[in-house]
Image (cartoon, rainbow, N blue to C red):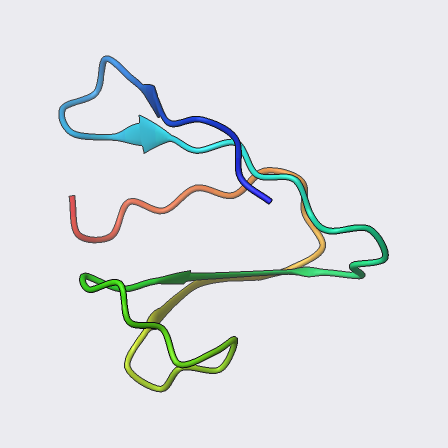
Length: 62
């Protein structure tokens, strides 16, 4: 699912390459400060992106 974390030259920003699982039809990227996700629709997680694009960026919480 995910690759390796790549630091960038922009403060504390990172690049995290992701590869969807075989057969996936769209992306849903969630962000949470803790590591206790309850699932793909976790009500306490921030929805960063949902859709079909290949590149996603989030400037929230920076």
